[in-house]
Image 1 (cartoon, rainbow, N blue to C red):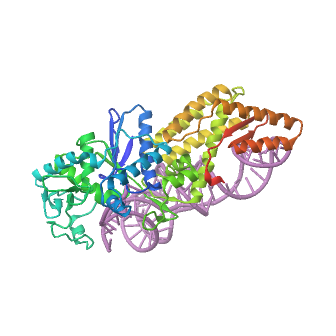
Image 2 (cartoon, helix red, strand yellow; image 1 turned 60 degrees about the vertical axis):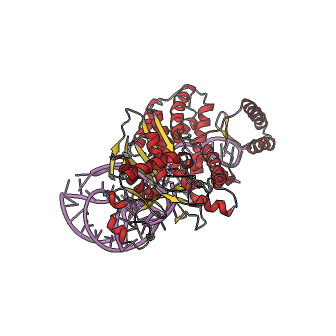
Image 3 (tube, rainbow, N blue to C red; image 1 turned 45 degrees about the vertical axis):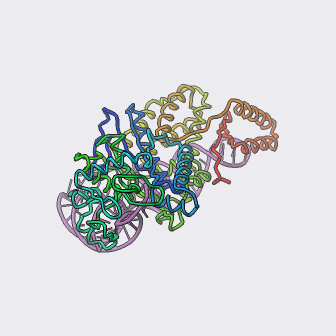
Length: 462
RNA sequence: GGUACUCUGGCAGAACGGUUAUGCGUGAGCCUGCAAAGCUUAUACAAGGGGGUUCGACUCCCUCGGGUACCUCCA
């Protein structure tokens, strides 16, 4: 599998002969997660599910930043503690992402639970004479790390000439950034240099090395983290270990909304909670996978609606497969192999999810076509189903289970309707259809039989 | 201002130095008691502008222009 590495700007082959270790920068837990967070995490979820489907072992570590000025501000605003804020939003994170059908990471380390590791990390940096204590905290000396700027392709001299960098007299150089901030107000921890809390970037350096070692396979996050967050992580980690940090840097593009940036200040964020209620997990996932991960995607009602239509086709396909019972008349192996291979090739090539989706839709279309012609037999359906499920699971799509009791009721109603139809009592027949619709069950009348599908309930259709 | 990414048909969005992407939409039709869903078929002869390399460029190079992100917290 090839992944475009943003550090070298080259495609790098993943070594899939051994376990793949991934560190993903997660969220700062001070508010609801939004659709932008969802995209990044869903992309890595698909990467992971694909590799795991090939029986490659994955270790995915994703942090929660639970100490940060924004959390503290929020706590002050609500007159509560930072811990309560972060606990609340971590719970909400799990609530949202479980619903989005994201497989839980191997580990979700929190900054506040790794203060010891962070302090040890800073001690090393000081020993290596690349960090220094000062009046307001401990700072990383950017000038001592000559490769600073290699990820974001920035030049130190250009950054220094930039007027927007805050002047802090206690820094030796305006570019230096805090690895430890002195503070008397909670949350604080004791350190050899004074009471305070860790700087933003240091937790990821300390926790990634703890769980994944000094160099691991993939480091990921949103595009907006390239600078300064990931640039600073590289500086800290490599200055500490004197060896290369992550092998591949993978960044997920932003989600805009009707062409504009999604941001708290503009008040145009769409929380996952909101979008889940309106559209459901499958449509969000299809939407997030609809473009290449490195590019911007634009959130709009039209795009979500388009993905809803696609999702209905997938559901139809699934139920056609479930209900298939005619005789096998067609050779289906070829189409299964073709779409399956194209699907894999697309993902192998820098996780081209849009192209993979094309293959998946092609399989569903071929299946629906056979069904429409009454040529979908039981055995073929079994063969297709296997591939259908494989793709569906890698994409993380989910079709709700039908309970046996429910199934019986539906079948009974349908046979009653059939009787009415045969007797040309169409009003009675339509009443049954309406009743089934209320149960979110949609009927599909084929030439010889009626099949049904249970639709996912979403607000957008009301 | 700097850096990175990007600019493909009404919309979304790939691949590829020369061949139909695909999907949505739209038109027509099939199926149906009617719908819905599904299917069939038609439709877009597209590549931001201008140069260049080439037998040939959407694909490579240059340049101009638009967009997005980052340069301050951000997935």
